[in-house]
Length: 276
Image (cartoon, rainbow, N blue to C red; front, side):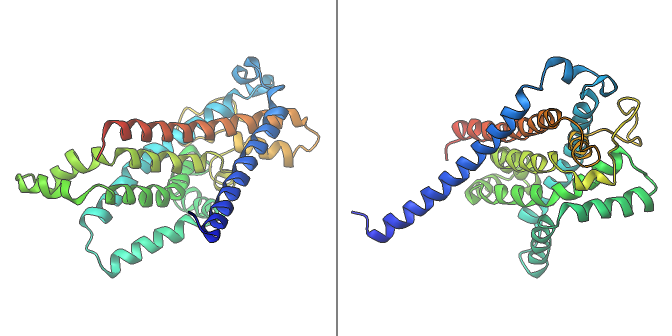
C-alpha cells in the first residue's frame, strides 16, 4: 500500500508531465493550424525571389551540416579525454564546471563573440564559416557533457576485461567503449544540433542575410537561414502575411522534431542490440 505522501508525490509528478505534454501539443497544433494551409510544394522548391523559401531551407541544412562536422570530432575528443584520460582532481572539476557554465550562456552573447572574433578579428566576415564556428562554440558544451556521461555509463568491467587480455587503452576505447556508448553519444550530438537549429541571435551577426543571389558557393559567403528569415518577416516587415511566417515556423518545428525523433530511434535500436 502506498502512503498518502507517496500518492501525493506521484500525482504531482504525473501532473507536471501532463502539463508539459499539453504545452507541446498546444504549440504544435497552434503552429500547425496556422502553417499547414500556407505550405505547398511550390513554396518549398521555389526561389525566394519568386515567393518561395528554397534558399533559406537549404541554407539552414548547410549551417547544420557544417556545425555537425565541426562539433562532433571536437566534442567527442574532449569527452574521451575528460572521461578516460584526465586525472580526477581540481583541474578536471574546473573544466567540467566551465562547460556547464558555457552551456547556460545566452545565445546573443555567442553571437556577439562570433561577430567580434570570427567576423572582425579573424577577418572571416559575415559568412557560413563564421556561423559554423559560432554555432560549434554553442554546441560543444552540450555534446561534451552528454558524451562524457555516455562514456561513464559503460561498465568498468568492459575496460578491465579488455585490458586484462592485453589490449592497450586506446584500442579498448576504440573497439569497446565507443561502440557501447554509441546510443548516448549519438543522442548528445543530435540534441546539441537540435538546440542550434532554431537559433537566431547567434547567427544574426555572423552568417545570415535576408536576401542573396542564390545558394552560397563558398564558406566565406553569407547564407539565408529560416530562423533569420522568420525574424525579419515579423520584425522588419510587420505588414507581411502571418501565413508565411507560420509556414516557416512549422518547417523549423518539424526539423527539430525530426532530429529528436532520430535521437530516440538510435537509442532504441542500440538498446535492443546490447542488453547488459
